[in-house]
Image (tube, rainbow, N blue to C red; front, side, top):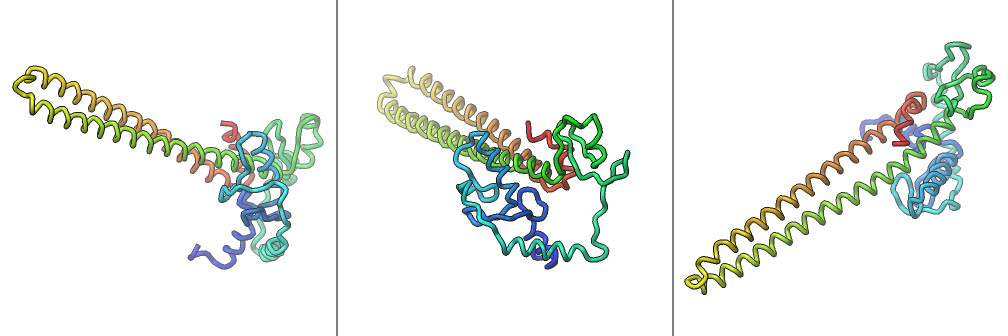
Length: 258
């Protein structure tokens, strides 16, 4: 962020961490972070429907309360200020137009997964469908992605703990085996003349056991590392997806259901 311009930093401060667009009715939650009221409400509803345990902040994962949202007036003023800056000449964004009606694509059909203009919405083919504003649809799906990211982070942490436990258990077993080996060698040293014929077979069995333990531990750790890599790739992919503009983001929303 050290190389960003003050204008860019202001835009970042005025952007919701869930929908990545400008804050709409920004509210502060228990941990101090702020989100659009619609975004955090959708996020909370999705979290509760999934029975994921105590409600956590989508940014820092601190435990929060659903009813403790507070209007962030200072942030709302900042958003208005940034919006005014973007209205300067040369800052207009290119609008996507309907190929059929040449009207602005401002709506999204959740049934067909298509962008619509107001004229398309009036057509018989979309009459019985659920049609919402593009921003509302983006907020909904990005809220769901935040929940999935939190769940994946938890699963990754769980796998990391399993990996550490597996490595620890394997090391402890090998140490125990080494202790037994040393004890046997000491005892057999005293009785070497009497037990010479029995000594080598027992030691060979212990060596085989030690190799089996090390092999199993290595195989288990390798599997856990593969799972960790998988979740890391998915988490990175989802974080990249949620930063895309709504028009691109909604075209790949099916990733949420995976």
